[in-house]
Image 1 (spheres, rainbow, N blue to C red):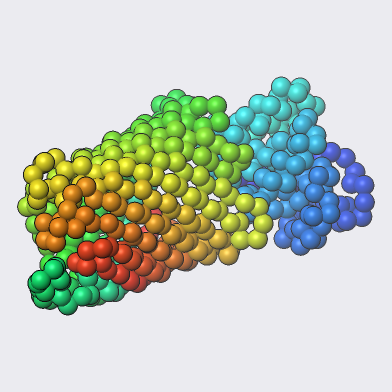
Image 2 (spheres, rainbow, N blue to C red):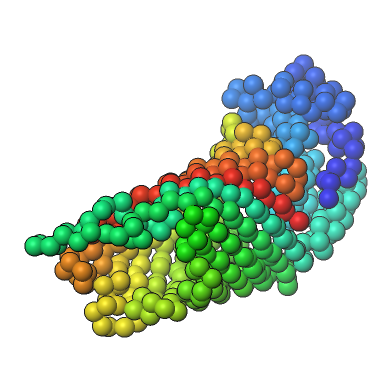
Length: 436
């Protein structure tokens, strides 16, 4: 739904008054002439000098919004309202900005704040029209259905996540490793498809769910081809400045056409907003993992942690995130073949995104996990200790509003004191995603 329900001329008619200097007068004329990009070019270089001047911030925010940059417009309008909380036209523009960012509840809150100030009739009429637009959007958002399909191909340097070593030694013995237990590379083709829903039962309570199918077929090493079916069902309750949520997760995995593993998970999260673009969260999740043919690996996994994300004003609209977690994975059997897989783990993850334009975005992440196993390995009597690093770098190029090209590179390195678990892996893929 387009947000330009009223003409720019109507909005300018409700501005705070005659601009006090030539630059602002010129910017106002450009906006009235629907030359928002020229207004941004005029005003943006002066931001360090003039930020905090409500007239300047109002026009800058409006110019950014009209050029399709609400994530930066919101900062200009926020400065304007800090200086002039009762500035009705600025709050209307802030409401439009929230609508452009998909934040309907915040848009309604801004408009209702204007009404509380008992503004002039002209502004009140404008507010009423926008509240009507918000009501339409709220009805649309009550039930949201989305679906996607994604297909691609790539190359995996280590399809079986295995060592490149040719032999394995223990005191007094040296064992050769056969080809199937060593690193195997292969090209592959992949297909992903899925859908999701959100149903808003009340303004504060919603339920959600999604289902997805992920297929990867290796051309050269088909025994490692896998299919995964995932499903999630959750509920969220909005609080003042945050939300709490819970989710039930199910996963079924097939390896080389045969049933391999089932996972049932339950998680809970508390999320707190930090300003307009930041979030802090703490979470706890438990997973029940059961293997079809390797029952000695059956385990229950418990994870807890914290996460933070923040969007920033400035070039490329950077977004960063970080998380820290810890937990344990305990096998269901107390016999020696099983306990060698039990471990305590902890990890860190960080990353971010840069938007080079409205159609091109870069995403990156890096993570580190340490795993300390409970009992010695049967094969060598050593208590296994792993340190794993993962790196991901990708681009998302939106060719059309519903079509995105996604090249991605991922690197994994697992340093282990047991050679058969020591490996590195490079994966390069190119996917085309279609959003319905």
